[in-house]
Length: 254
Image (cartoon, rainbow, N blue to C red; front, top):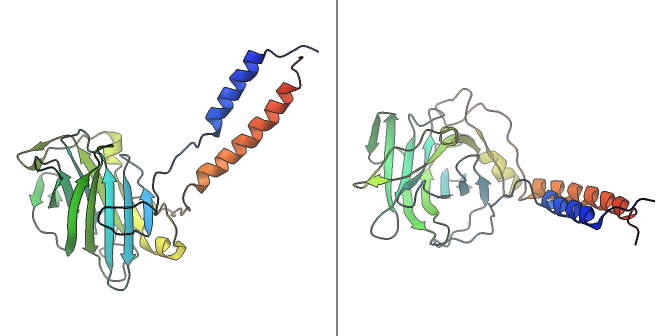
């Protein structure tokens, strides 16, 4: 019986190690601790710009507490998260920005995006409180903390997020318009997150027909508990690799 070179078997084993690694690693965890000492009941890995949203929705008073995490496009840049109750994109959105500041912690400001050419620094039309921001010295990520008042009995709403590379005289410099920047919008399904009580990927790409009460017709929402999807893939890869490894090992002649 022909023998299989040990080097070939080693190569196959190395490839299997790569297959075993999760194909999509979720960084979001409801056990993560924050310096504002709040515990957020839900979190989601947003589909663009390597951003994450931790949040708790209180249906009794229609309030949403959030911790939005993202890295600015460059260290001296800015990050932002906002709500659009009347549309799906930037135009019409009201946003909270964290801007790089010489004071240490990022400076927090609120903006009303009337249109792409009319962006105003002003109070938002809904109540906002507990506003603050911080920088992670290790990763460079900004975290924006805020609580906002949503329309009563809202089940979902469109939200946007963005990152920029620079701040000029305390104002955000225009961000890039790459595909990932344009895709930084989604629908946050509050009812799905409440029913599951799990770490939930509850965002779907914003689109469809929007209504004035903040609800949006969109594609179905997927809710997952933590990293289960990654681990299912991992388990299948482990089984496949083990079976083939045993088969190939049988050809080795010692």
